[in-house]
Length: 340
Ligand code: UFG
Image (cartoon, rainbow, N blue to C red; front, side):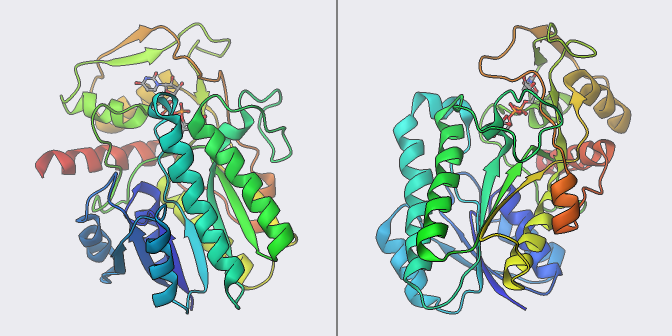
């Protein structure tokens, strides 16, 4: 059983991954700077697993914090690196904040791995944003990486490049996981997404509208060349996504990787339109959603969904949870948040 550092481990995907690690018998060491989450997520993890993970409030973009972490933890078996800023719009307004935070922390972590005597597998949180509007759908991992639409997206592209070079030069082993659209929450509703302010992403906006926090959902664009005119995405349950991280780190620990740096798509392989998501939400919640059509959102692609053949075959991982189940869990979580 392995001791795994989870950076950003109190964030949305990080917290679900901490739960999945504990459930597989591993020991997470959780680090978070609490810039976009709350300390009580630790209680949520404990409620689900019965284990309160070791936690350190540290900022991995600060050299002394990283040095402290590795000085006090020379027994780490692996690192799953989530800690990053992730708001696309904010990254356009404040690009330097994004480049500094997302890339500095990545470089510091890789430097520590390169310095160490032991092999520490590294799992990187990447995004399907690297593909932009892919020419061929579904999107395979060999689809070209195109110039990013936002500084946020660019930090994922540059991040992958940095890892590739560090792997080649420093003997590091790494896997980049390119997420499609993570949604939903743990079935217990003890942990989930905590969007600060007005949500940018579809599902939190939908659940907040249903809860009466927002008046109306704007559907950005109904003139796309798709089956109903709204944009298509591959919505993947966050618990399925979390489980893939454990498989990825175990693959590197068991030295079952075929290359020192591998890249996998994490999606369901199914594309859903925004209107299909709204309909599915109405079905599982039994509510009518107040929505209107609005102009397209700049930077949005028409359609993106994953080809999952590589990840199915090589990681033996497949998304198990349906869109309805994902939306039901997101709604249960929203209702739980309303009671806090
Ligand atoms: N949408 C709406 N109304 C909203 C919010 C979203 O209609 O209020 C639409 C978007 O236009 C898009 C779809 O819902 O068609 C999904 O939008 P999200 O913002 O939930 O997700 P994105 O696909 O835009 O973004 C996701 C990740 C980003 C990542 C990006 C890469 O959240 O981190 O994919 O494509 F950069």
